[in-house]
Length: 287
Image (cartoon, helix red, strand yellow):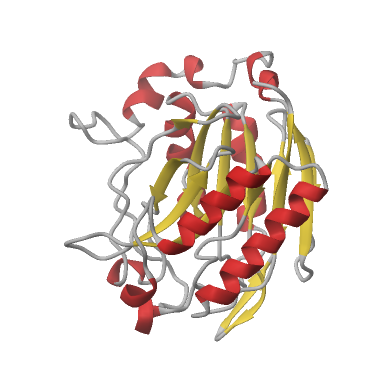
């Protein structure tokens, strides 16, 4: 687990235009690489835009070998740059997943995570990710959260218990929830003694006004990088996953093993991940 630099691209959403968004992603990868980054995180549903309900099935693509993903995988290999990117992933026999895909530095797909907690009617468009698991990468063991997933402590705790030392979250967080995700991901880093990287949009997409405030957080709670609510930004943060081994575990899972392995709500049936709850919706506008 060698130290590395991570980049977070807080940017605008461009709905429906996958070709343009793919070109934007490639340019962002080059820019991150030029500034010394080894990992780049992009927002939720970046390749298609978020509010695409009327063309969702058409714009979804399979993982790991969808056409856009193949282009991104080749670019990642050429630059030796890891990438976390949001897109709708096709789900044969069901609705697409609102997913983050992690492409490692060798161009392989290390992880695909479908959103498990739905907000504001998303359950009408997407199927929930069937599992929530950490996975191994060339950076170390990692987990992914998609937007609303990060608002529940059980999701990050489940990934930490599964060995994640870094959690990346892509979001499409909008007003009036400006401070929510920055505070949540700051907290998730501290309570699990891991690094967290949070990437949100800025600007306007149809009726949504995105509120930025992307950030990177150290296991001690130190803010490593922070964007404002309105501007595009390429944030950089130095990451050393060895730090997760040297910090006191007094508030980690070992302090409450029964509660954190079975959740505080009781025994979990065999085969069911404790982070997969039934929260479906919120008090925001529906899609």
